[in-house]
Length: 90
Image 1 (cartoon, helix red, strand yellow):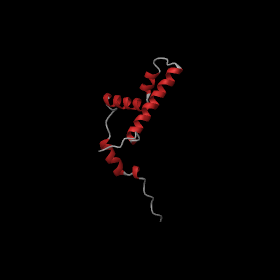
Image 2 (tube, one colour):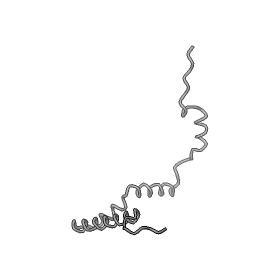
Image 3 (spheres, helix red, strand yellow):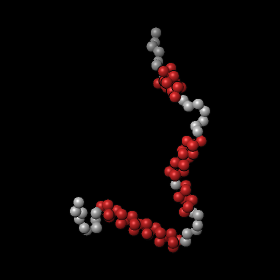
Image 4 (spheres, one colour):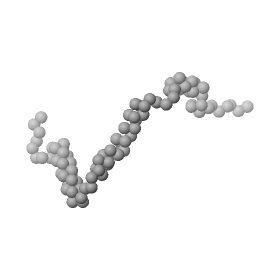
């Protein structure tokens, strides 16, 4: 006689009983759904892109903006890495 194969963990009685008690009844409340939606939209960058596309930006203006951003980023990196030539005294 062969030994029976054990059921996978999620099909055992103890697993189902434990998770049936914690299962919420019905759909989640509206405020929870709204908060989840806001987080997903923020992570996807939808709002930022919408604001950027609200007005037409000339190619020359776009180039200037990107250059300013690059300069600002570089200054910030130099400040963090302390490569401005002046040693920190603290």
